[in-house]
Each structure stands twice: as structure tokens, then as C-alpha cells.
Amino acid sequence: MAAFIDKAKIKVISGAGGNGALAWRREKYVDKGGPAGGDGGAGGSVYFIATTNMSTLLDFTHKTVFRAQKGENGKSKNCHGKNGDDLYIKMPVGVIVRDLKTNKLIADLNKNNKTVLIAKGGRGGRGNARFATAQKRAPQFCEPGEPSIERELELELKLIADVGLIGMPNAGKSSLISVVSAAKPKIADYPFTTLIPNLGVVKKTEGDGFVIADIPGLIEGASKGYGLGHEFLRHVQRCKLLLHIIDISEENSLENYKKINKELKKFDSELTKRQQIIVLNKLDLIDFEHAQEIKKEFIKKTKTKNEIFTVSTATKQGINELLNYISKKLEQIEDIEIELDIEEDFNSTNNDDSNFEIIKLNKSTYQIKCGKLKRIASVTDIKNLHQIKRLTNIMDSMGIYEKLREYGVKNKDTILAEGIELMFDEDYY
Image: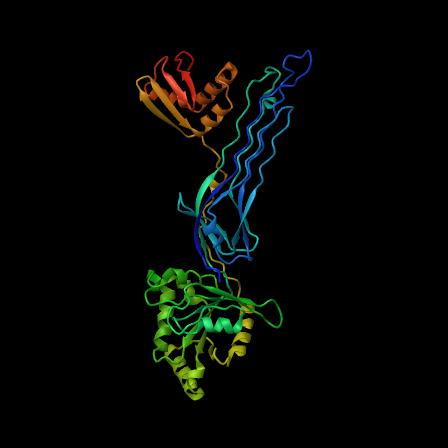
């Protein structure tokens, strides 16, 4: 059986935009023939899409880096580069997404086919044909494409099932799910047999049935993280109905019932408002009359208004009656909507890399580190004075020269701008 993985960390990278082209029409008797450089293609974006065809994050333990396609560079004859393909990554329904850099929740994939933009692809750079004007008929520069967006994310799966089975270890939850569905969980006669959640689909005579989750048992103190702790409790938050399984053959069954509800309340008080059906299991281990006495005593001491069923998963006694009741109840209960504090995700569309750092290497040499500058330098010919002038104008508009003055730059000092060596001219800047 495939392992159940409900947490994973991955890295996503959108596609960078392609660079614009610097090109000219080749026509006889026409000087350079006019600008004809095409635009670069846009980079592919990364999307998450929820699907009911997945029930675990296992795939993300094998592959942890996901990269969308880059945009193609522009070409001559005004031919634009091809856009990079968007990347759609399938996620199980119920996944919430956290940005590890900001520690903010940015997405809740709580419905089938819900699609969320995670990282926008970079815009393609403009070719020199785009910069032609009546005054500037032969622009000798082009534009680089926007950068990609890289993000490190944490994925956490909260199971979305109609019915959640709760109860102490070895109460018979795995046995019940194996009887009512096609799921085949590991079953043995010792506590904590179930270390991972199991999902089963209960078929109804009419309709498509319902999903039932066999969730690992918990111990006292689980709300503080003891035992399986939060690994158990967070999976019951979205269940419409809770099936509380109790081993009727144990003398302390009433105490176990109280412990479970106490832990639910500590973890999330809303869970105590969730409707429960109490199932007194292992009827085959005691006689029927004794079982009825236990049921009456249970009602008297707990004062519960929840429906109580006595069943035996071993002999299937009382199982059909229980399933029929669950089916009717589910039709009356609305879907659980959990309000998560989802932040507006500005980083998914932030392709800006204009932040810069100035490092003074010695008394007359300054190094500039900047993503935007690096991209512009990649499409700059240091032998072309028009392109160098454009580079320095952009640096000025970014506030780099103003900042250099704060660092004490002087006339004729050397500026290393991402691979291009410039000389500071105090009369010009």
C-alpha cells in the first residue's frame, strides 16, 4: 500500500520572459532597413489545481522542484518569441499552502478543480522595433525579459471526508472501515495499529455514496502534540460528521469517551459542536442484555443527546442500520466551511528584481549587485554608445547614482555594473 504523506516542502520556479531582439530589415539602398527586432515570449506561470484523484502528497517526496518553461527570445524580421507553457501542478483536495519565506498561508485548495496562481511568468522583453518613434527611427537597443519567480512552499493536507472515525487506539475504527468500504487498512490487536489515515468510500443503494476517514487514534494530551497529536486532530476539522467508536468490552469505555472529547475541545472548540454518532463496538464480546445495560448507563452518565448504536464489526451486527442512519444525516448537514486566514498573495505576481546592493571594494571602486541590472547588462553591447547610455540612464532612474553619492563616489571612480565597467562622471550625473 502506498504511504500516506500529508506534509511536503517544494520549490516552484516560473518561466523567465525571453529577451527582445535587436535586428534590422535588410533592404537594398536603405540604411539598416529600419528596426525589426521582435519581442521575447512571456515565461510560463505556475498554478496549483485541486483534484479528487489524489489523496496523498507522496508525489512531492520524489520530486521537489517544479519549473515552468521560459519564454523564447525575440527574433529578426519582427518575429516574436514563443511564450513558455504554463505549469499546472495537481494537488489533493484539502491542501493548504504556506510561503516559507513569509510564513503566511497563501492558498486553500478546498474544492475539486480549484486553481490558484502560485508564480507568474516573466513578461517578454520588447525588441528594438517597439522603441521606434518619429524622432528615433533607429533605436539601437532592446529590452530583457522579466525574471522568473522562485518560491519555497510548504504543503499540508487536511483530509476532506464526510465522516471521520474518532476513538481511542484499538477501538475498532480500522475494522469498521474495512467492513463498510473497499479499503483494506492494516488491522492488529494492539494500540496504534493505524499510524496513517485511511479513506474509504461507502456505496449507497442510491447516489454516489460518502467518504469515510479512518484516522489514527489519539491519547490524552494529543491537543498538546503528544502521541500522534496534531497529526490526528487536524484531519477531523473538515468532516461533516464524527463517528465516535468505543470498545464496549472495556471497563473504562466511558472514561475513554470523555478523554477523546476533551482533546477535541482543547484542539478546536468548534469540533465539540460537530455532530457525533456514538458507536459501541465489539458487541460480539459481551451478551446482548449486558450491552443494553451499558448503553443505558452510558446515556445516563454522559447525558448525551447523540444517537447511540451498538454494533459488532466482527459479525457485522448493526452495521446496516448504522450506515442507513449516517446516509440520512449527511443529507441534512451542510458542508463544513473552515475560515482560514489566507493572505493576499502579492508575491505570486511580483517579478520585480530592481533592489540593488552597493559594495565598496576599495577607495575608488564600487560594485553594484542587482537582478534588473544584470538582465539589462545581458542585452547591452559595451561597444555601442547608445546602449551604454541607455544602461546608465536606467541606473540613474533607479536611484543608483544618488546612492553612490551617499557612499562617497568621486569623479572618474570605477563602477562595476554586473559585468560592465563604467566610469563615474560627476558632471553628467
